[in-house]
Length: 358
Image (cartoon, rainbow, N blue to C red; front, top):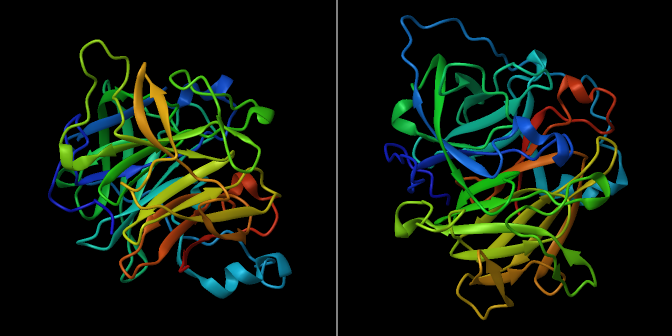
């Protein structure tokens, strides 16, 4: 179960109850100016004199499901099933982040455009009906389009349940990593970076070192864990970033994370429109014996390394997996960006949100 509840809001502090939507940079870190650098943003809804017509649809974009007969995906297809059609694809939106409200069952999906100056958006889909119910167009505090890949926290009380609305992002909170994916699960806010040095995705400014894994690889993906039971997320006097309570160390090319109530952590690993993705399912009980202590802002923070010692299962999926989110029935929602028109030349595309059970 996620810590995403209706009616609870968070100001700049990211209290339990936030809508958390995320993205991994589709452009190299050197050109990631469209993403709020090392920040998570809060918001307030812009007043609307009248409700405009909905801009987005749930029009399918993948005419042929070429993945069905591929042996590589047999395990995934036996464990997972396609669900609702991802909204916004026909309007050129590129889906990135996702989270579900436990109380309402609404699944919120964020996306961005490759065209500068076009607002990113959050789209709400009712999982009971599979239908798009609302859209939220993101603006900067001054009213200009917010065109980042999205990484924000929005009080649910500010989001109307239906129709088209504009939302202003008012504040940022620095974190030690360049936030490429977020999740609100198992009572924690998780914020991680996409690390792939071979493709110009380097280490984050706040975590300028790698960590050795049992696999013989040096890991540079750091997932900051913020315990939401402690209340607000803020930057203490003298610090540059919000200090995490725990850090998970993950392999390269991570696009999404979810921590389960069953003492597991699942990662979405992908890169490239023609390369198979992986869903990595680990055993981890927070509070068990630590794997390491990590240095964040000159202080020790408890750390766990997600490597082969903890890996329970690895499932090969179609290319371009993105965010993960808890489902009410214990499954995990998997978002793909391959259905975006921008990736029309990709392999084994899908325009659905999938749900997998390990």
